[in-house]
Image (tube, rainbow, N blue to C red; front, side):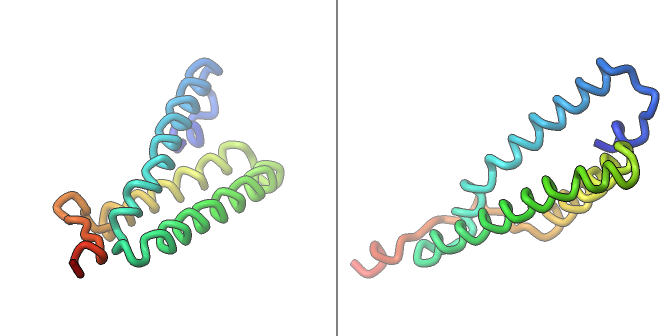
Length: 115
């Protein structure tokens, strides 16, 4: 995304390829919403937790869809791509720094513990 923002004179084929790679990577990240968040929450609140995460994800997607044409018209396409790139770099840095690792976590069901 940042390459698209700063590469004003990139050929159309390279720009389209970069945007396609970005779309594939973004789609792969969106798929991770469900399995990762279901591992974060205890089974008693798992449905509510995943629902909240997906809700905020959709609110962010709607806000981005609404604001992108406004930013593009007010400034320029490169400015909009730069803003998107900065937000994505910030979000990735935040997730790598703050998000807990779930691989060693064992999922326990409260019903099984009572037996």
